[in-house]
Image (cartoon, rainbow, N blue to C red; front, side, top):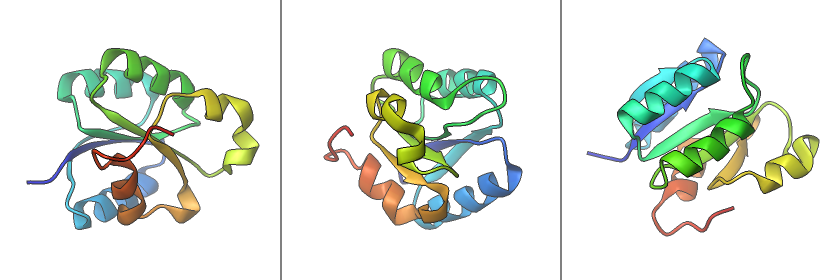
Length: 123
């Protein structure tokens, strides 16, 4: 059995796409959430190995959630994603604790795997 993953994104189409790619890459997707509040509950309940976390959620910033996850679930790798580029997100993205950032347009199971592998450095 592969690593477990939680997908957090407010767009159901992207969640389905990400689930398919992560499962093909060997991840067990243990849950999905469409907003920040649900993400925190799911992450704390499921304690996944990794979280794919959209930066722009309807109720809270994914950057804020990533910081909270880093405090609460130190063993969980957080990978941020957005339809915006890293340069559009600026300093706030750079200062957020995470394993990395993948633009949605470049998302793949391989890119995610490379970031959350146990020996990958913190971004």
